[in-house]
Image (cartoon, rainbow, N blue to C red):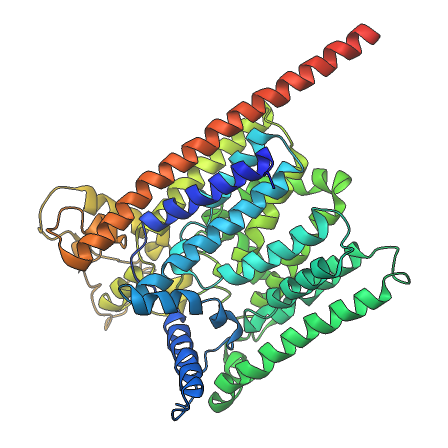
Length: 507
């Protein structure tokens, strides 16, 4: 079966994005959040399965905090890692590939709404001008974001689901969307709306399909909830572990909501500036694409409702990671509002995209943990300073590191004192602010960049060649996608010109 022009472009875009993300990979993922837990759990799942098949003594299971369902997606990479280099190395490819898949689905959905040029521009902006780029290495949120958006695409972007295979696929995707993280339960309203939109006006005729769909979604979630309790149960339960992090004043709920968007240290508008355009796009998009806007706002609102209840709605990871799931839906609203480039739209949107590219590059270039290491060495590693201190702003700190890395000054120390302003005089027993050497933290996380000038052989040389090849292929595929899109854009414009000319002659 021949692929359509749009789907061919989407495949090329996916390959280009995957290779471009992979080329800057650190070559390891175990240090990213809780991924080490999931690696251990995945390796133990394979060990248990092997022991059962060979009738050997079965080792005790190792559980991860979100249960075994998200770990199932790691198993193919972990299995390959047993054959090539290491499981940790092979699993580092997964978030890059999944992020590329998320952006590709966004492109396919945008192509149903707007021009070829606008679709590719918004897709590349999402891929390289928002938090999606740094999280192609951090991981953590990507699986949930991918399946939530895929569920929306299946429900809202195509024709009505009529065949049982498509219905079962939709049910599986919806179930995974709310089960890949323990906090996915807050996204139930999103899935309920997608089911409602899919069967709107046909409840009686399609009630058997609806019942089956709901049962499958509920069954997957119950399985996820039950298995995640094996991790949280010995630790006193998930609720008890969450309770110390909850707010103690309803006033903090309001300030949290404002800070989640506008905080200069962790706000979504800082780490994904293009979302500013989405705020203006929502009212316009709502008039013609109501379901899309409702979907986006439900994803945003449900997530916001959870994290605004926390005393610290963000953590030490890059930006407000819990809103990673809302970025692709909000980008979709921009395409639904402005289907074509006009000067009025292009100037602010391109400006926001460029700012986002710079910010996201800094987040992708450095491991998010280097700032935490520096804060600990400076004796300032409190959660309040991590999430709200302008002196330790992640973007500004990474910019300092990047300037130090670019400077050709050998190993000479670059001292920096993260000092604060006392009002109006320091306490008499206040210790002096401690200086740190930025040179100790400016090493990029990218394996390819770190080993560019280092003698290489054996496995290290093979990994380096893999990343360099990935860089070349990524740029080539992205250039190809741009070239095809330019041709499609010209074809669209020529078709519109012919239609306008025909209409003028008819009049």
